[in-house]
Length: 247
Image (cartoon, rainbow, N blue to C red; front, side, top):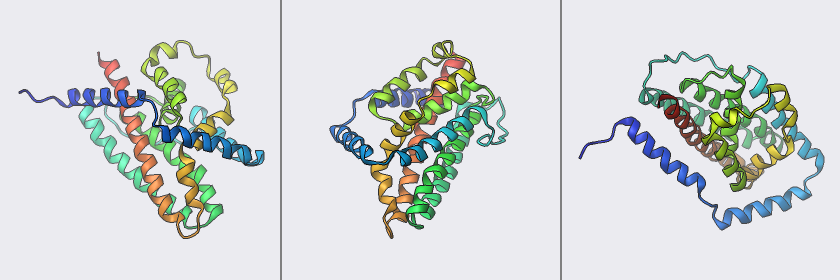
């Protein structure tokens, strides 16, 4: 029996990932979402505003800033296998960085653990910008930056939002044709909704990071896990684009 080439294996993995992303959530996840929605009702609006401001700053920096751009020398002639070897090496570096950051802020008590929200956002966005460069996509393009944000949402959203975002990513070229200019798009983002989707996905684990003496362990493993999830999403999100580009 003929063995599969690397690209054929990657396609099969991509198909499995797409099937997984389209599956309905387990009932436990749906219950957790309801619990989190109820918790959000008791959180003061000022607290929501702080987190919303952090998300807004991250999105604006991703779309119009340069702080997440990392200079990377990635030859255009690299094969998919070579790109993904580079990607996996980069992914491991970011996972370890995220884990150490989570452990450090988790060990520092409530205030530092809360600071982890913004710090961890920055690590994840820098990782996604690096991933785009590795797969050969120009992040100077506003729509490529927007794709990065959709990958972020895809990794950290509810089932309903995940399916909505996945549909846009799978049909990215067609969706791009419907997008307004950059300035108009920025004015239409629902910042609070964006941040609640993100927080609700990770909060039931990350809240344990606030516990004295326990926060460091939770911060380490939670950040490592969430960066791993983001890595899987980025890899398959860019595989989608890669295969559409060459065929």
